[in-house]
Image 1 (cartoon, helix red, strand yellow):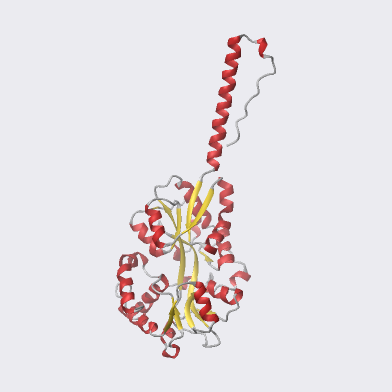
Image 2 (tube, rainbow, N blue to C red):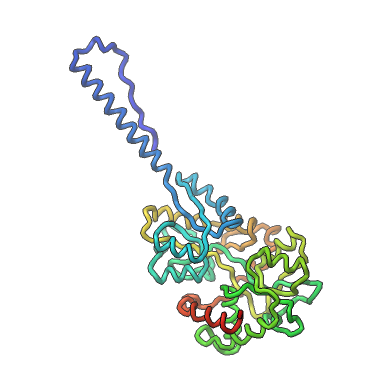
Amino acid sequence: MAPLAVEAPQAHSLREYPKMKRLNEGLRLGALITTALVVFGSAAQAQQTELILSGFGGAYDEAMTESVKAFEEEYGVTVTIIPGSGANNIARVRNKEIDVIVSDPVFALRMEAEGSFAAFDPELVPNLANIHPKAIYSDFVIAANFGAYVIAYDSDDVTPPESWYDLSNPEYAGRIALRGFRPENIELITLFAKLAGGDERNPDAGFEELKKIAANIDVWIAAHAEHLELYRNDQISMSMWTDGRIAWAREDEGVNVQGSIPKEGFFPLSSTLSIVAGRPNEELAQRLVNQLLSPEAGVNMAEDLGYFPANTTAVVPPEIQANLLLNADNIDDLQSADWKYIVTVYDEWQARWEREIQR
């Protein structure tokens, strides 16, 4: 809002006015000043509007900071990005402490089932029209970008693997690593089940195949840094990792690791967005989601983190695309489980995983 122009009183000596006129003039001037202060105060308050965006921490949140700068300038808003994890993000959403949450399908769809999110408004989020169908989980959960889970491998030890079944080859006993009960391994269970004639509702064949892979496991990985060191120290030959992390390990860290897309397909690492219902600035939160779904934000995340944009109008520069295995030509090959169903059996599957796979 433009500052209120306060008209200065005319240059007459107060001695020219009777006492009452002087009093009235003073009251009128005081009222004008008070009005101006109220207007200026309101404008300042508007400039201090804050949106809380819950991210993943580290490099991801740093990249988002760059992506929201234009939004902050356009709307006079401060976007405060706070790192979070599954459990504390659930608490924050339930307590309505954040405006927009970056998550994954597991936690996001669980929160949706509780009625925690506001539906996206296409009028306020016009970039929805350009989002790839693979990225749309519901009217409340949408992926801004994808990493691609593929087979990572040391080319000094193995030829490029062609199948997820290669992970259970006895030849590689003690040379395989996975990351535990996580979305990518849920996807792998589902894929194996489907290849054997089952599905999410009949996953026995998938769990059986994971048992075979578990027999080859040297390390259940807890973090990307640990993953990197396993390859650096020649402790493993194959694992499941994202294309962006593989490129980071190879290009930035000098580790001999490559990526291969198996013939059965590959899985998305989905960074989902959702708007928390019941917060005071929902319209601005909708517009913030629109910014995070923009082509510019998508390219920024591709450049900084190696994630492929969900916005189909984003054009990733060739030098960045060269390090990504996921591209516009193969994005339709992404395999994805029925996550709305998976979240209803998540705890059951996790108990089975701990009982049969990662004991």
